[in-house]
Image 1: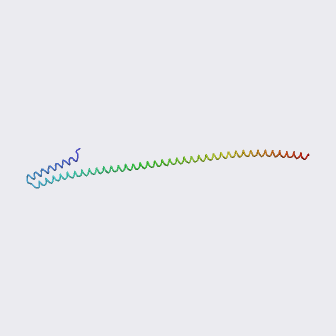
Image 2: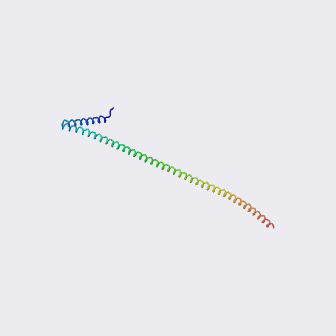
Image 3: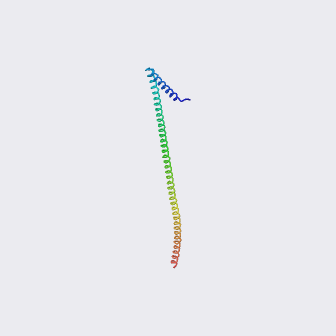
Length: 169
């Protein structure tokens, strides 16, 4: 298929040639109207060519502006994505920090709990030792008390014997 710009260019060239022919014919025949018509036809072809160039230039500028706008949109999108990525990374770090803090707190709690339990076990063992010592001391005291009762009973018997001996005398 032929390019529409080519037919326009051919038409314009044909109008320019036709205008030149009319201008030359007008000059040869000394027909000012024909000569003016030829000049006008050439100017019209030149103006159409200039208009086409202006359209092409405007189209080029429009395409450049669209390309710049697309590039700016892409840059804005890249920046938005980078901002989202940075926000997601910050959120991930914050989540990791929260999780680490929770682990530290749980570890500290477990350590405190173990220390508390150890202290409680130590106190319980100490109380048991004290209780065993108290039971032993009580048993020893009861044994001493029994020994004392036995000696007291022996002393009473001895005293009775001595009394009996003195009375019998």
